[in-house]
Image 1 (cartoon, rainbow, N blue to C red):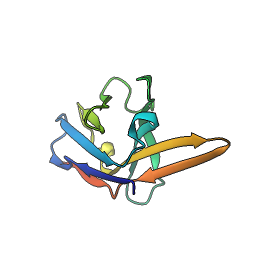
Image 2: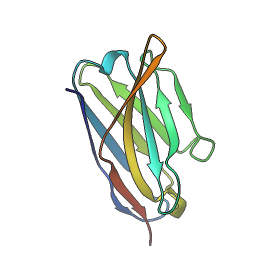
Image 3: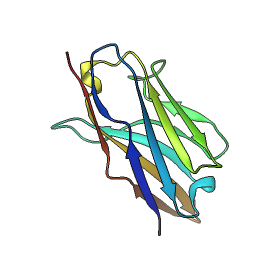
Image 4: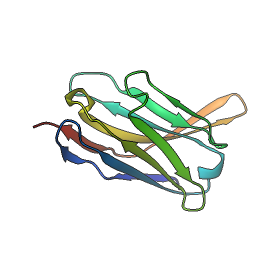
Length: 119
């Protein structure tokens, strides 16, 4: 059974930093693209960034240069280091594991961790 569990969210002042973690149980981690999404109140969930199984990363324009994704395959964990936080970064941050098996896409989600940026 695959489970994803996020941690590290909280209340932070504008300009501050956080490190979000996602622990993955199950045997899918090493072959999955791992991603972080976020959902602000009243808005749709959006992709923040992702890192492939071989370490290639992609970031949304809104977080490029401020957020960094990394993964530790030995620990089956993925991290999101966030710097220079802005109020618009507020939202629930979700960890996602994605695999392609043949022509079918499989997504696994955590329950999310709240990040609030406010003075």
